[in-house]
Length: 272
Image (cartoon, rainbow, N blue to C red):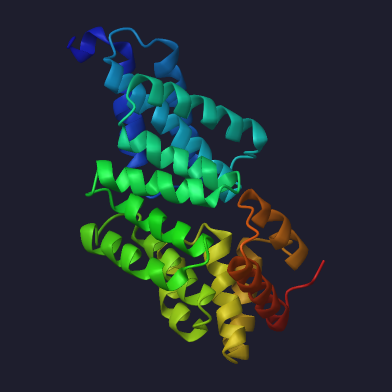
């Protein structure tokens, strides 16, 4: 392998990977995308696996933006992510990171059984990848099996208890309890998620809804007020529209989301 000095893209890739290991924000997502795109524009000297990993990192970052509604990401980013994953898998068919990114794409397309298969394959290829276990749990939720999701999410926490993604693991765990109808059990998980990742709208609002549904009205109103200061102009109609970045017609999911919306209305969020 050539020395990094002779490979201008190497420093960019190292920078992108460093950012990727940090807690995710819209700002560092944009930095990752820019560094990766510069590296891919001049890939001379990159080994096939390095190149595949870089394409996969671009795909995953685009999907992070798309699924979180960050940086104006829309269908163009989703399409670009699909193309990047195809490039990665063409180079290295058994690349765990590419199967992981593919799972996110299937989720965004509403293909949840395919997403479940992709994350299962990721775990087979890299059992130590905590995020893959967590997303496998998330897909068990999205395929209507929230209680089956909990052991997978707990595996992720056991593998990487100090991971910057730990607040996301708590979010998945809280959502699993919520979708199972255990709103009180969801609350402490969602609180930990909000404390660790306050830049996400959905963990805040599931906490608001859970509090309202268990009758903690004052706490729900206070949590909604704090949310409104950080994320102005949200309505239940806007929540429903935003959920379409993750379409799902599973009856368990449809019913759980309806209950989520009910809790938001109980807490005082405007319908439209």
